[in-house]
View (tube, one colour):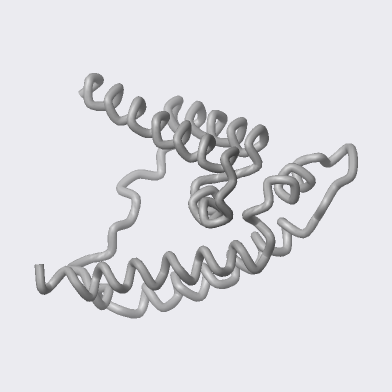
Length: 143
């Protein structure tokens, strides 16, 4: 357990920075996300700038990752093992997109928005977790 503490603290710090960034950028407000998706109405392009900034930061992270042998608090990097676009990926992406559009949240902003104490956010997070549990149980049965 002692070896896990730096890893856990690193994950906690990363999550706090991510949540702070989401809050600072206003991405915990579902109206802003739904405004971005409303391309034929009152379109709000601010999410595109947030996403663009995230891509730049991620590119820097991947550049650093390529130059080092292993992460600071783990034995290896945990990257996807496949790049195949299959039916499960397309259906899962569609379900994610529909939920994002209807609820105005994806998992990260939803978790950060829990700090606002909104009943609607809590219902969304409960439904999201239930969907994850159902998916995991169905995936185990398929194996």
